Image (cartoon, rainbow over all chains, first blue to last red; front, top):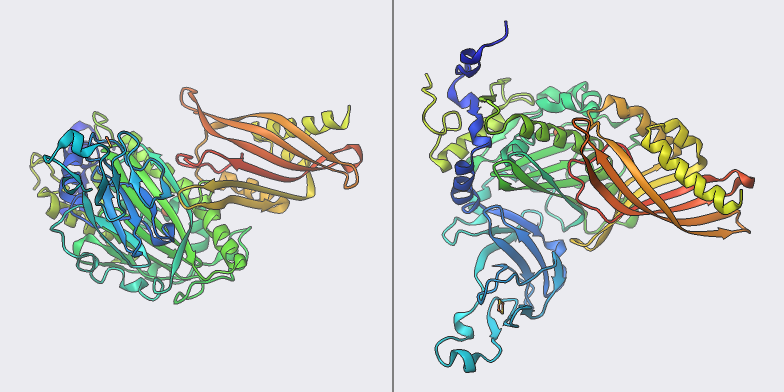
Length: 399
Length: 153
Ligand code: FES
Ligand SMILES: [Fe+2]
């Protein structure tokens, strides 16, 4: 029998950890709070060190908490991060996403700054400000940054945050060996999707949706070992999924995979989800890294990076590029399906669409189709938000 | 028809075939040694990228697999203008540069939006008056491609 309105809104027959209220995906107040309590407190990947190979190279970044940042390598080769905003009249300092600047000069009134964030020149400063204001008052706002875990540049806009090491804990342990050599970003693209960032992270945190991917249905799910992979949760909301071999020749058009990855069994796969929206996905010959950057409750930028080894020969690199883009490029088989999924969720779950619950109730001993990865995320989310994901406004009268 | 007209017509027919999802028709316009690629320059990482790369057999597999995938079923409309044609008599080949705009029209309501812009670099084998596509490089300026697409441009 189909359900009437009362039945539709009835609490799912699960513990409250096993479902969420869909207002967490649509409510603007919740989104603002997430920016404050989550994104402005957590370590976030801003870029990769290979995007800043030389002294004075910079890269801009739209931080999910809202701040516009840039990361720049100093003369001392140390990477630092700053607000991309001029202290004078609030202009954008660096307009291009990437570049090289020994000296950062604002185009508006030519105030200049060093790659260490010091103000080095205020044109006609003495004449206008006399002794009242000078370069010493006008440095840039620096944001904590660290390079690590495969050479990524991490930023944290909270001056009082824990260290990156404390934040990650053991979560990247499964990939430690795989990330121990110099890596290089070989592809980068962004997608804007009208959906909530958590829905993307959820998709990266559950493999039950392999039913959506023809490729995965025939190459992965049918193979022995698929259902042995286990989820493991770590402090701070991170989670990992263990390895398995993928049978590539089950899909016509997939050739023998020759280029592997150090420390990864041939055909192996390791996936690590980091709270609140980053995913390390290492498959066969490619490391894919997603960064979810919400622009609102129903708008999301996802940054996609594909990485190989810095030591790659041109032939090895070409194969990694092929492996990546056949599956995960904008014309790849799986990425389009994954994005179609969260796009559809964004259409269905909107304010006034009378959506109510999303279920995270599968229990299969933490193996691959168990929804424990998502539950683990929402436990952390609830802790940081001071709200229960299943009852974010304390008005659901949960049993 | 002059060789130039034959070349123009081949390029336009290839777009018509793709617009109407006549993939067999498209492959019929290709030389057995055909190679297809979608490429772009990515300024954020200062690198060239090849988003898609196939030989003729690979294109056929891609087309044959389309119904098995979950895809956005919007239709694409390609607007192509052949800008330059350079013929190499000795090689019996021609190289062309065409402008490309691709529009996407949604199934629901039929809204049309610009999907991508770029250029098409073709190498054509003249094949004794029956020219065929030998190499196609769809070089995109657009890099923000939304939820992506399963069908090549
Ligand atoms: S706004 Fe930057 S120098 Fe005036
Ligand atoms: Fe997926």
